[in-house]
Image (cartoon, helix red, strand yellow):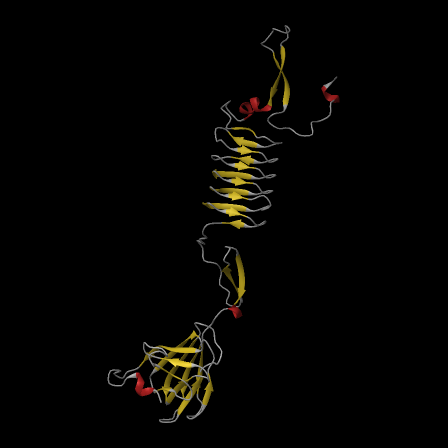
Length: 301
């Protein structure tokens, strides 16, 4: 049968056999002797200089594994290198130490890490003891961006990390923000305060105060601040709430309820924080007066 009449091989790997003739070997014929040889024996001849080959055939079609690495390339068209690695997924690649790429077209370069079966087209880059479970996902231990990204303050989405490590986006509207509002209502008025808002109180009246009614519903950690630029101001709580001050609570008596107020004046600042159980606590108070001579209790009436 002529060579030109034989069909082309459907695939070729390092285990494929070829027919060779050693013309210097006349044991079979004066013209030379015929033998078979796997392509892996010939690869050093085509690698330049006839040097040693550092790769050998894996256990599946077109799979290759680094020699002496104690690694396994068992997926079709897979590659395993490093030490004690496994490339088990179709067209997967494993490198590093004791790590496995088991998903289709998956990649790992890590230590003691695994891309699970089903985590197709996913990758683990760096780190150690990472397990990839989701498809189309890149897993990293930490992320360091060397070059500052372009700034665009018109954007309204920010990246956040979920408890499972996945990165998602959150709109700025869903984040707690703190806003400042200037209040110029005349003294004697009541202003409904909003959580996570600061108020610059400027009623221009030397005696009549602007009363700030704290929110009747709030989340733990919510803050309200009032800074008096001119005139007077007071803080009070809604019905059924308590205003805690000092170091005590309702067991020691350092609290009050509506309609009692906490009063302060020009160039004084008060901050209250919601601590749950219908309680607001005076978390910060700044004044130019001597509190030892003018204690907080003198401002509660």
